[in-house]
Length: 357
Image: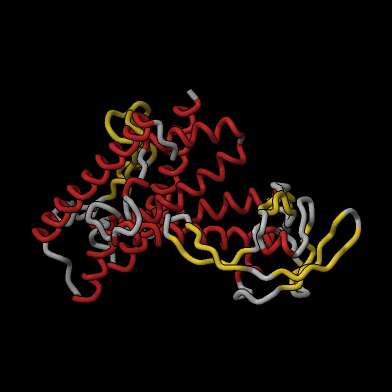
């Protein structure tokens, strides 16, 4: 039950904000909006305000904003022409189309800002949980329970700072100041190279000293300015990671089996619901960023495909022919349908094999 509730909440929020971006920018540029729908298919609830009909429809796997004159070949009356999407300058059409993905990124930034302002930034303490036998750390006399205070004279506040300092050593000996039992001691540790797998399953060399974290965490309280900066940084980091992942999948260096669809989202959303509001909000932000990137892919029928056509129009000074757009959209629909079927297949295979995502 929690999976169903989680899926409805996550998709509802994401679709609403995505379509809200299109809707608000269309209204801002004087484009008439005929319908604003959350979901596809038969309308479960609908009401009309002005010329716009608002709907909550039966199938919640998407949504749409239908604008006046959205199709280039639409028959328009003279009174509707000023409100026609097609008759607006190409720059305004591009902004209206781009507003959907942009609102997905803005949603993530706002969620992160709220979380960092209210709950602070959680980090892993630079406290040693285990020292690997015969490792550089063991030879230097480091022990479980030691807290790393500084490396090379630079203060260490978190485990990630410690790992980065060791990685940047290049194998040269590093001077560590350690807190142990209320007193501080010095230790010289010489990192060694060891092959490790990154999150993409690729092997690379990294300098390590042979210690693992204790798992102890801390919370850094952030002011509004710091929270905004961290929100922007976190959003950028996820965008970069997602784009790199997609590029590696296209090149074949990362398996497409990592892709998931609505079933995986439902399972993960259900888990976040059970773990509380903060986890659920963080998950919504993550999926929102992924949805924004997906919609910017240059595939006809997606926002990125429309932006591609408008970009060509801006360069050549005239719209892409209707026939070319129709053929491209058929190809885009086939690509999108293939992708949907593939992620559903991945989801089902995870269930059948009991594989975790």
